[in-house]
Length: 397
Image (cartoon, rainbow, N blue to C red):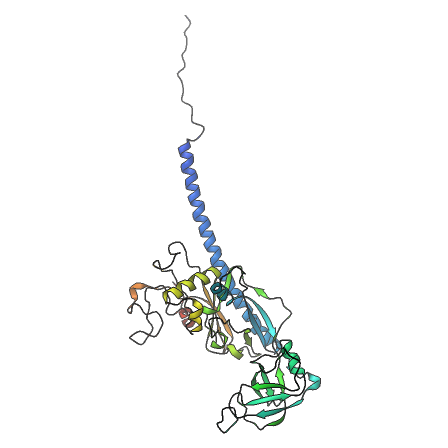
């Protein structure tokens, strides 16, 4: 008898995923990618600022090394950003005070040229303030009957603040000059006059002289900072002589750090410690607007003109900032120069404020609390001592 064998159905494994499972996996991948991209973006932004600070440090060290090697003064000239035509007045002023590039500079020599060295002109003295003497600033004038000075000023080689040496010898004295009396919009006058800003305490009459011509860029190509990275001079510690005195003013045209053959800094920048604040360009705008708001200024330009320097913040105040909770302050660095030695180093900005250690709420500026010393913090996100790490050598946590 033949038997019929019945085969029981066997469950076969599933070859795909359900729609729900696919959606869950895609969502997880999207979240991971988003977090990863944000982390990469933040790391890139931080690296750009760090690279920019190292670039500034390297360029300054390069000028020092060149000065020592060649036995001649070599400097670094900082160049300001160019605001877009669409920017409003406040933004234009802020961007025009941000450094975006650097170049090496060297001396162009003196006037008269070598073949005319020892040329003589005359000094006249006038008691402008009627105090019985003529040894005050602006009471001595150097006068020439040639058209050389008019031509130099017309070409931009003779400006107020330059120096003239009288007499023209190794023992001569350098005097700052005021060239505003030379009018290049008219024909050359019969006599050109340079007023001496530095007091002149020698007799009037014929003198030999040499004018120190402006510095010129060396043949090497300028160095441009990484994209969207700037040196914000408003938040830096630099000579007051560089800073604007009116809200509509900009910084001094030539912002130079000059190294001598001995490796130290000379000229305008030879004061205290120099701290160059390297930051993201977007931070520079947003934090300044927040800072002006926190201090009751209409614009930061008003603040700067009043002589109160911008202090970098670590966070944005949620009660006044439209970006609070959606804007992260990016990394900042300080490039510090010690003029006496020419040493150049990079440090983090000490901008973090811990509200729990604030003994004097409402105190914004350093050294104005009731104890006579700086307040450790006031909870407003504005640092009381942004240069702490650079000046003490401490490291951030």
